[in-house]
Image (cartoon, rainbow, N blue to C red):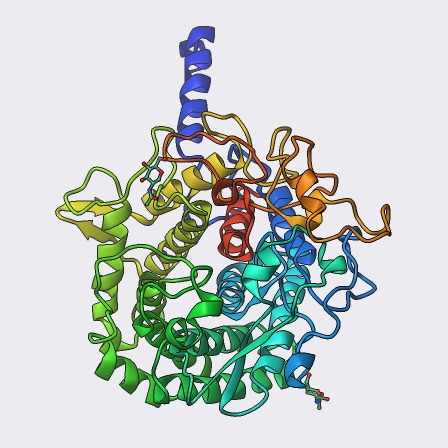
Length: 504
Ligand SMILES: *[C@@H]1O[C@H](CO)[C@@H](O)[C@H](O)[C@H]1NC(C)=O
Ligand SMILES: *[C@@H]1O[C@H](CO)[C@@H](O)[C@H](O)[C@H]1NC(C)=O
């Protein structure tokens, strides 16, 4: 036998085995298989969570790791005699926008619900990132019938380039109530509280109960007093976080989260009765802070696929239709990709769609694997493995496998954006430059070519344009601004990838 295996056969065999290993590099289900990772997903995961500390508003805790940031906005809420200290600045400015903050919280929570079990040491950091938001959302919803949805006047804030610690623009407080309803922001807030209640169910049952009880009340308010905050508060919330997709998607998404968190049959009945009118099978496949339709479809498909909730069986089809729209080369495919292979939805903050889509792909792959199901796209069979490899391709692009040969996560890899559109990161820290930098003097730095002095580690920027180009200009908010909702779904996708390549 040994004599038949000549040296060259052995070499050939080795090469074949090696190639098979490479092709199987993306082995579904995780485990201890030996694979070839393209990236250090664990490092990226750690950084993606650390980023949230740079976005913190309020009194920073002793264990704050991003030490160039200091306390800020310590009297937020005082304009309406309420305590609204805390929460997150959404992106590169110093406004606290409740709508994207709530969506960020929902997606961070979903990341932990699906992949927290794989996160090891990063689980605690993820939970802290969620709690920083939910402590704030509990404050914002503490008065029944009122939700405080924004602190800060966006147009005046944007007229300055100031560190949060120096901020002297009006901290105006905006609220919704039955006279000025805001169904989209209320229902998203309910979704966030409900999703977070699942995160803390075991580790802090008391906190979890408080979140769930509040979610129920907030959803009831959202549904009962229907109207768009983009109407009542138009001057203040538009064009920044104006809800273009309507509030139907948030009602379906909110009900889906309440169904999952409370297991109260009321929400199942609500979804059955209203799913169609709320757009359960709408064709738009955008998933971000504005439109949650496809997120609701994937989440509700889990109830059918994993928990065997038969009345929701249509959501497998709704979810499949969404998945088919993403997969290039099948009849119902409608997604656009750049020449370099990046999912491209919009010029402004495109990377949020890349991260949210990657999360939905690995999450749906997990549900399909558990239920031993596949997706049929007009006759071609799509396996969970195909979904995972598309997600991996998107994340790998983000981390550096792209025509620019750079990472779009600050502080990851050897080349990354140096001039992110972010006030705190671009101005010197108050620990090295304690004297105040006035409103307009910051623009000298904003408009300069100097790299940001404070590395906002883990921040993922809006990213390349439709031709894979990225100018790395600080003034370019569409491409160079980070945002909490870009990172939140990436946390889950990176936890999955890090685990599946044996890094966690
Ligand atoms: C439950 O949590 C709330 C809010 O965090 C806290 O004020 C309260 O003391 C906690 N109660 C118990 C019994 O731990
Ligand atoms: C996106 O940018 C491209 C190139 O600058 C431009 O042609 C297109 O109109 C922009 N699309 C939107 C929706 O603004």
